[in-house]
Length: 203
Image (cartoon, rainbow, N blue to C red; front, side, top):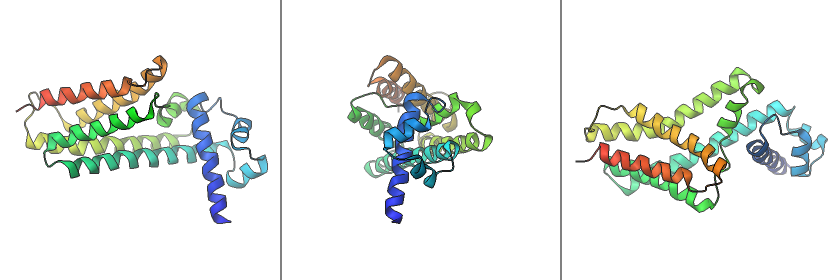
């Protein structure tokens, strides 16, 4: 019974995430969620006290899945090369290949969706998002710091600003990809960032 309950809860959260990315948090109603999951109100409220509690579950699920993906690419890049520059470039390339495999624009970012509708959420949700974004940026920063130690860059930069730069490219790229219906937008910008790093850290 516990497994069935967990599966139902996961179905609700997954459906809510898709709806929020498509319609926004405010535009997603309980009726939308019930229609998408084919559940009754009673079944919904068995798992969640209300929409606010569901919203927190959605952002936590998204953060966990997102970070796990990037962590796996980071670790794979480290296994594939001992060179700090190659590790960063492979890390970025693995992300690009993942997006290529989707065949359509990435649906968006729950963090961005929640930030756009900031008045819908309390300060604890916003702090959670900032914490998770810092962790994501930290994956880049760690690799970039190792690169800077190993190879002096052509101009003065910090690992933090380079990490913030790619995070901004990715998040902004999702918006542009969906606005133009262009499934390759983020990959192209990530590839430009890779070329920038190659120039910045050329021997």
